[in-house]
Amino acid sequence: MTARRTLGVLISGGGTNLQAILDRVADGFLPCRVGLVLSNDPTAGGLERARRARVTTAVVPHGEFGSRETFEQAITARLEEAGVDLVALAGFMRLLSPWFVRRWSGRLVNIHPALLPAFPGTHVQRQALAYGARFSGCTVHFVDEGTDTGPIIVQAVVPVLPDDSEESLAQRILAEEHRIYPQALRWIAEDRVRLDGRRVTIAHAAAFDSRTVVNPALDPPDAR
Ligand code: GRF
Image (cartoon, rainbow, N blue to C red; front, side, top):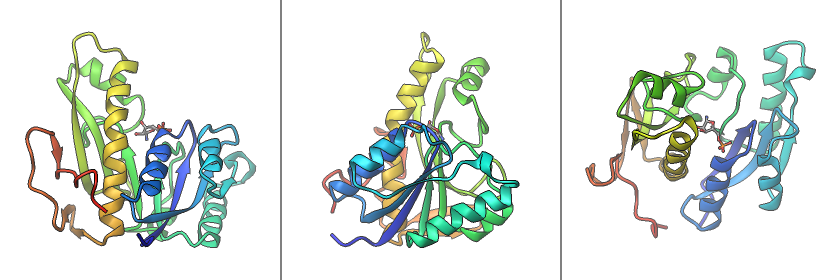
């Protein structure tokens, strides 16, 4: 397996999505090298996950910069030093400026714990429960200049159950995040993703399989 991309993962917290990415790189499903894990918060649990996987880490505390732009220039410098050519936001809790988004255009993706365009922003499980939605889920999308508005690569649908709390719904969604994020990154790394306006097509993706409620359907787990 040859690494086709050098990934940079930006985190602010526990890093379970980062862990899913590291695991799928390790088992050969995701043909990438993780060149850098960068956090704006020195206490982010994901930093320890990266160290355990022997991945280079960086902490760039946003509070130490006078402006969003200088903070983002510092991040960009670290990503470039590490040879990163694809950036995955994985629970990175800073809004990004149009400058940063343009700088990494087409090479910047995010995972959001709702079925966009429903429930963008924060506290989205609370929003979905309060709304009475019967389904929620998660979305991997390219990042554009809006908040959670970029072109959608893949979504997984999760039912909202009668007894759900914010926490139980978040956990059910998180389990799907861990499946679809490595998959989306694999599609990009294999140059299978085409963008036509807002619409994303995936070359050679299996047809939608209503049993899995993941669209497009996932590559087989043993695909290499
Ligand atoms: C996930 O729910 C992700 O969708 C959102 O932030 C959370 C990060 O969780 N953007 P983790 O740090 O990957 O565990």
